[in-house]
Every structure is written in structure tokens, then in C-alpha cells.
Image 1: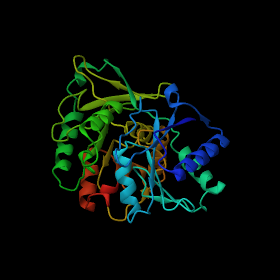
Image 2: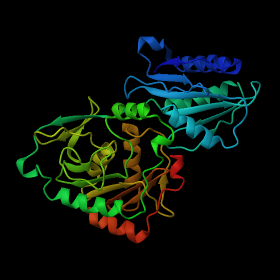
Image 3: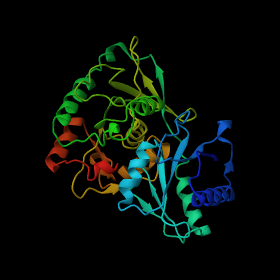
Length: 362
């Protein structure tokens, strides 16, 4: 993986840190390049705490790690790292705090709480741990859709699927048990929010997503960032997903003529893998909600990646009853499978769904 640094190290500690990290990355087979060459897959971006300006990556395949120097160890490292993670539009925040002689290193991703590295300061083992954690960011992102205007005439209005999805979506949105997660406006400027939306072809703010099997190979699914109170138009609010094209890393979607299509949810590949593995599953619901005592997966990989989709699908498959499963993704929400949407929602409602614990930390 080619890597580059962005911004300026703020003190001698960070100069030393950059040199040691670069050496460890190169020793592991990664190559350092100039950022101006536009070849970096990993950008290690220094954050200016006085005038923080996020690095605007050219496309969604570039991974950004925010490097933060804090002379004092924060009282609440998780909240500190989370705030800078969001402000910097990064995939991972790396905080170097305390004195230069013995700094503390902690990492924070969108899905994982703060991780404190335990190896001695400046030791080869410490930087080997960092490189190993960065390795998990080198994933196969599936962000694109290939839209084919081949939707059958009888499905232009969504057939029986759209009314069912609309009914269930409105009922869940009105239940009061769901959360949209932390408002982006708490951390990001309007310009930065627009950059994220363009980069990922849609809003990241949603209640979750719904899907309903159509036939052996295809399923209906809500689009990215759709308003659950107004799920009305095929191609804009719901899509018919017909497959996954591995060489192009894209979901294949059938859309009607005359509609400007919206990107299907980033979790569509997870749903595709679950349906393919379990013919008895008729619907899948992902909610930013929780159940007391649910078995939960702590994900290693970024949302929207092939690796994340495979991990979640394998977690569902390992459950006691994959066709009627309810499993958690730590600090993110629930994945529930069932025979149809109504059956899933009935089970969730009876079990007492609630907001995700510490959703603000996601």
C-alpha cells in the first residue's frame, strides 16, 4: 500500500513519530510516495488543532488517518479522539499524547472505542502494532453501483415490495426506538458535509436499511440516506439489486427509465451475501437500535468494504438460526433476518428494541 504524509508535524515528538512510523511501514513492504503524485492509498494527515482543516481525499478508495499531538493525556481519550476523528473526516484517529520520552498512543475508528497500545514507547513492537492496525484499513471498498435500465414494466412501481417496505419503514421510524447517530453538524462544516456526501454518493445519516427478497437472485433494498417517512419512488428510494460484479466492485441494480437513480445502501453487499447463503431468508432489516443481551460482532473493517460484508454474513451464518437471526454490530446496530419484513418487526418489537448504547460514540 502506497502511503504519504499530509500537513506538518507540530513538535519534535511528532517528527520522531513520523520517522519511526514511516520506517515501520516500509519495513512491512509499504511504499512511501509524495502526496502530490496522487498515488497514495493511505494518507497520514497531521491535524492542526488551532486551524483544523480536513484532508479532502480525491475519492473513496483513499484511506485517511488523522495524526493528533496532545502534550497532555486527555481526561477522556475516547471522546477526544472521537471528536477529532469526525472533524478530520478520517477513517482512523491516532492520538500521541504526553511527554516525548514516553508518549501514550491511542487509536479510534468509527466502529471501535478507543484502543490504547500497550507496547513500550518508541519500541519496534509498538510500531509493529500500529502497522498491523493500519493493515485493517487496506480493504476492498464496494461503493459503486452499475445501473441498468432493465426493470420489468410490472415492477416500475415496486410491485408488492414497495408498499410493504413503506409500511414497515414508517412504523419503525415512528416507534421512537431508533437513532440517526450523532448529527454531523456537531462537528462538520456545511462544506465538509457536502464533500462526504459527494464522496460516498449520498448521505450517511439514516435509520438503517431494509431489504426484501424478490426472487432467487434479486432483492429490493432501501437507498442510501432515504427518508423513511417518504419511501415512495422506485429508483430513488428503493432499488432492485440483481447481483454483485466482483471485478468492478459494484452492485448491479435494475432501475426504471426516467428516474435519476440514487445509490443503494452501503450495506447492500452484506444483504446480497446473506440472501445467497440462506435461501430461506425472505427479508433483512438493519436498524440503528439494540436489544439487551444480543450477541454482537466488533468489526475490524470499514463499512462499505467487502471484508466487512463477509464478516457480518459469516456472523449471521454462525448464529443458532440464521433464517431467524438477530445479531448486533457493536456500537452500530442490529441485523435481523426472517421470512418477511412484518415477521422480523414483530419479533423485534416483542423483544423491546432500544437505542444503541453509546450511539454518540459511533
